[in-house]
Length: 353
Image (cartoon, rainbow, N blue to C red; front, side, top):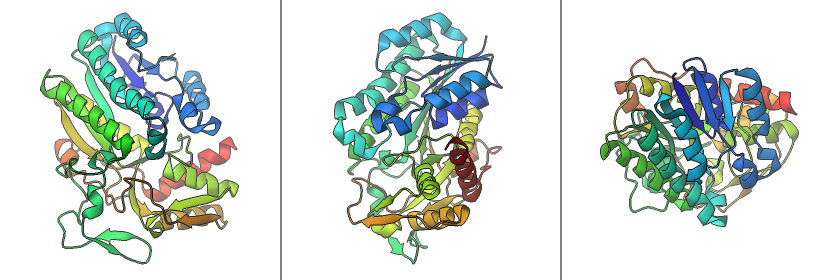
């Protein structure tokens, strides 16, 4: 039997992975204990998404396990053993601001939880491909020291800089920088996944995501930029922009396109390989530009205000360079642009309200 195991399976990327890999594998095992509700409140609960998965995919089996608890993971890995061919580790505490509230919890989920998953895989399914959803926050605020230029609606990198054409590549330093505690815990996890590939020879891939987005995101004020923004645009709830005049730039990758990257890697895996994963030059926007699109789609002016205080470790301009991944996997490309993705988010939120 061929089994794919997905952590954070009721979240944005995890649920997309369940849908995608359910067509490729005999069984998809999901591990998710809905900690997103604990992190961000009832509005962020992923219970609806878990229920959807269990209803739609007959070869999906859910476990309410905690990745911080080895005994809970061990039961699952011992039961399925080497039938597990792929581990997609998408579970995380994903917020800068929340990490500072509970550093022990943040680190235990992001770093210790990742170590637990790696070790369980090494002991019970050593030939499985291990795919890890990292983050561009491992670069800390180093991108903020690039030569940036302010325009009417966004910051942009100087056209003479090597990053102008395609964005920031994997050689950008993750050292000597302010990460936020969230960024630091993800660095620890990122390096662990690399090390299990390089030291133990496991097939591990690290994907440093930009803004991961899509219609199944339970967006909140502290996490889920486009999803939460569109929710505010539809409901009329107030939105606050934190710092940088609203001109900070994010690249946005649809959850399907990211999971398709995972699939391409699974088919021809490498050991300890690192890839940037975002919308790149194909799909990026500033806060102000995103607000304008949301207003156009909803036909309503948004209620928003501006705070001079930017989030600690936040990026002023970040666009991912995916050249390395595309050179390794030339059959992959983006499917959903920014407007298509926002329309899907709009329709998904509207259907749930």
